[in-house]
Length: 313
Image 1 (cartoon, rainbow, N blue to C red):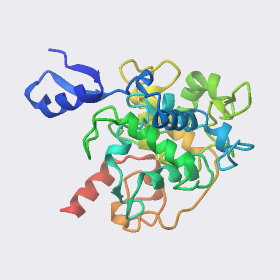
Image 2 (cartoon, rainbow, N blue to C red):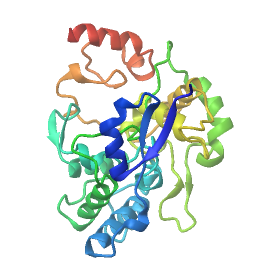
Image 3 (cartoon, helix red, strand yellow):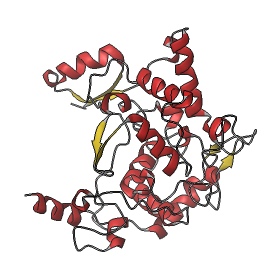
Image 4 (tube, rainbow, N blue to C red):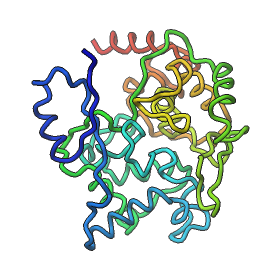
């Protein structure tokens, strides 16, 4: 019997999460965002709507010449968190509020949701942090709280964030990825990865994938496992988790091509204070193993993962 995938939200999702072990036909309960028509017409609702607008049109408020100030590089948060962070497996915010604060090995500390948002502004939008207690931060947190409404603490349903792909048995190949990029990606993102600006020039319709206007080397999507999973389930335009247009191999290779290109370089010396907790695809040393940086960047990751498991036991 073919396994089912279903989309649920709110109270219905909680009920099934608590009972899904009883139904062996359900393989994944995929989070989906609540309808924006349910945002209340109250002061709180105005805050939620402002938070959503900040995510969708970040450059208008926080980019170069932004109405609030210049904090980011001109990209919008939703260039990476699709449809204002609402797409299943589209790097969404479904579990953001339910899982933060939490310990993150990258910093070695308990991080708040505000810290996570500012990390994105600094790394993915190659900018600077905003006031953690300011109006804009409060609005974005309110929007993420609304998106994750009814989710119990620490629940992270399927469909949240990015779905990572099975590892390749060999290293991902940037040259093979270049051919995929030319055929499948260049139309929207440009021959030189420059992206396409919106007609009003406030932000991008299709974001730059490399170059000075793109995310920096500290961003999560600079890790190839994240990039490959994101591409597989969302790219090119029209693709989705249940209707992909690329094979796993193509997604890995084009991810390798993208992260090979020049982009802003920022070193975060405080990252991964315990080097034993670095993910297999973190491309910057020092490492707790003897595998070269090239393998940590492109794979194959299976041997690295096996070495990590042996070390843990």
